[in-house]
Amino acid sequence: MIISQKKPLETILESLGESRSVFLIGCAKCATVCKSGGEEEVWQMQEALHSAGREVTGSIIIDEACHMLRVGRDLRGKQQMVDDADALLVMACGAGIQSVSAAVPKRTVAALDSMFLGNIRRFGQFEQKCSLCGECILSETAGICPVTACPKGLLNGPCGGMDNGRCETDPEAECAWAQIFSRITNDGREMDLDRSVPPKNYAKIPKPGKLTLPK
Image (cartoon, rainbow, N blue to C red; front, side, top):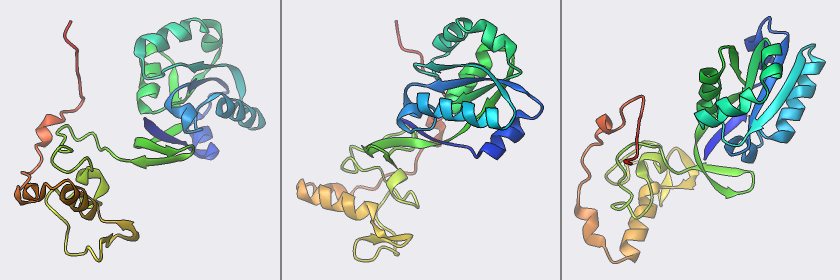
């Protein structure tokens, strides 16, 4: 899921500029789980905007704000409220914000910062496990991604700063390659440690990314 967090209210008000009336858009998926753009957060934002002297013409929680067709359809159902607003304030990740801006020819303002693709450890705790690098090597590294888990993104073993299995950038964090080594040896695959991983081919993650499934 995309982990996001709310921008400071002062930053949002500055981005809104002279827009006096605002329509609020939240997301029922990632932003709700992150408590950055769900129903409760949209209500809190409405109250904060009212206190700041802004009018809220209405709001909507879209099931998946990154789904462009759904965003367009749902906003058409709130057409008058959208038309009455000077700006749309979107409490969703960057993908959701751009879905809204593509659907409505009206000023679109981001209320959240998109942080990373995260795993949920438990409610309210998120950890980055994948960097969407386009060339997955998890089969070779025992299901642990060194591109993400290692602060230096090392593909071939620990650096000289590793000490007693701990990372030099954070003594409380276990070295990613120490974890990889432990898993591989526990599986009896020590021979895999002799194989060198070639440099990543970043051409495999062209921007903007596109994927169309075959029919």
